[in-house]
Amino acid sequence: MNKTTFLLTLGAMVLAAGDAMATEGAVAASGAAGAYGSIGMGSVIGLGLAAGGGGIGMGLAVNGALQAMSRNPGFYGRLFTNMMIGLALIEGAVLYVLVLALIFMYGMPWTF
Image (cartoon, rainbow, N blue to C red):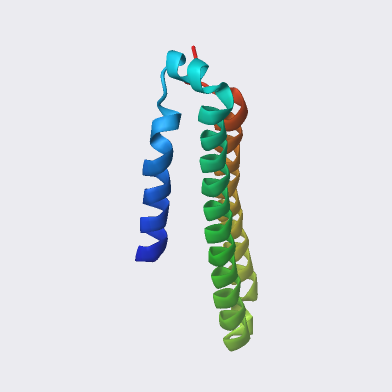
């Protein structure tokens, strides 16, 4: 993640923090869509960043494995197995972010 992406993400989080931390009275006064809309938007942005980072990581992993396999075909089995385990771990991390985004958007655990 480069500095520009980090600063843009941080700015979006700071701008959405007021709506996300609104009290019941403020949510009732402003309408529920205002607070929950920014939570949903933040969840979708976070999911997009996670999926994009996971895609880049998977591409780099497959690239490295294919280059190693082409240089030394004798290690094909070990490289392929390790590559598949790594890809599964990356995909698992993206799925965890998806589950969290769905909980934030539809579960709303902060409203007791």
